[in-house]
Length: 281
Ligand SMILES: [Zn+2]
Image 1 (cartoon, rainbow, N blue to C red):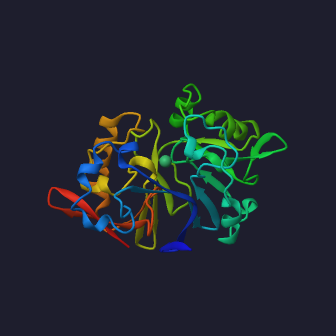
Image 2: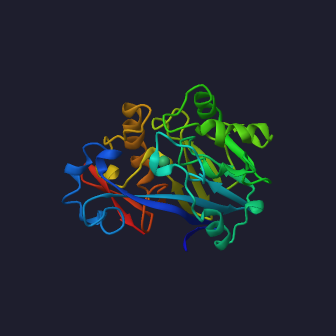
Image 3: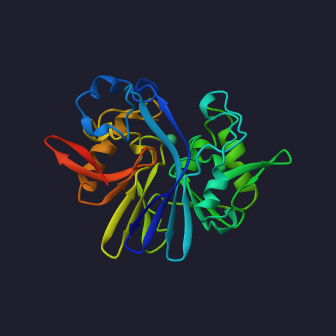
């Protein structure tokens, strides 16, 4: 099990799956930039030069609360525009329980944004109906993100209808700002660009600091090239500006935990000439 301690806070990675895709499927232009960046292996690039992309949840335990940050793809979802995430039958809930977290124990579900691979386990299919997977949790949605997606169909499939709307209907949703404080140690930071209301999650406890990226960075090659935008970005100009600004601030020795980083998943952003590298923790 991969986990980190940040002062009194712990963060546990629970894997749903890892895919190995050509870089051009998500980060067009990255293929030419990979050779020569030797620290990308073995964690983030395969021997064949493909992008390793991990789909995992990060469970944050802080001040007696159990917070799950992003809920992966989920099982049995209809995803005509995202075949790799369609009609899955993974052991995620079993693995979450093996890591010590029963669905009933989750107090807060926090979505960095409302894309297909971040809200899937918000719900599960029971007797033909999508019901909340975490019945005792408050599901926090950033208002700007929620407002955008409730009027904007996702190309991937009926993501909002099967993974967000049932939460509203069950009365478990709460709208929050993009600077919301979840506990005295955990808060949100706006990192708009990948989606309109995208947030990263900041942790600060007993003088130690960490940061959960969300999808403002999909892959560590973007630390070397902050202007390398994702084809899934809502506004690539804004996502690039957000990365440049964030890397400058986050290269201060805090632990950076990647939402899609494979392998060891976490490390430190280190200034390297005009750019940055990532020292895996
Ligand atoms: Zn994602």
